[in-house]
Length: 113
Length: 116
Image (cartoon, rainbow over all chains, first blue to last red; front, side):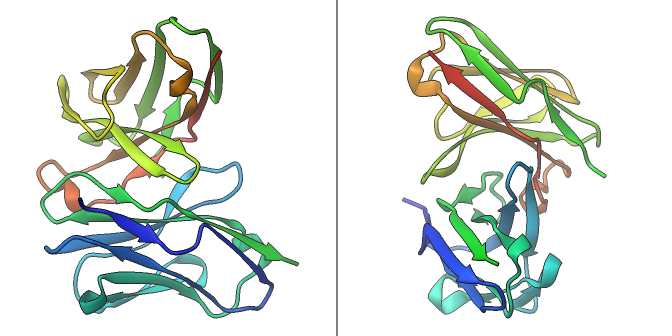
């Protein structure tokens, strides 16, 4: 079955630490890839997306993600996290031409001030 | 700014009650979605609609139905609420008929439903 796997359910970091959240998917075809973020008490919102072209994608608030096709991965990175990055992060994938987004289970990120 | 609104932030119902969750979007989007969000499971698609009066089942449609009589409004109906339907329900919309797989989904704030 098609699936999206996020490696860590909970991550705790100190401010200024570097962040990498893993995301792997199991589709064999051409995919669109997304990272969404849900800050405490707020809506889910798009952080960044990859459709085609440069596999290194930059998003809002200093986040970036790299699509590595050979590894079926789309890991999220930020060189220096802030307390305000505390949130839950979701990776989502859809097979091009298919309406459905398949979601990872989410990673709760806590940044200690 | 795209705005997706949901009728309630919190709702408490009793087992067996009929429950209506309403979602309205103001961006003339063709596509609307209902998800449920449970800890450790991510988002699971219940139903989606790509046009007025059109609907498609998602991964977990059992126990739910939907209605889309107007483009801006998408309703989720729990015909007879059960305790295992206690969850956070998220509505989303996206634009681009026929090309929706390329488009970002915009989410509402969610309705936390508790069924007692």
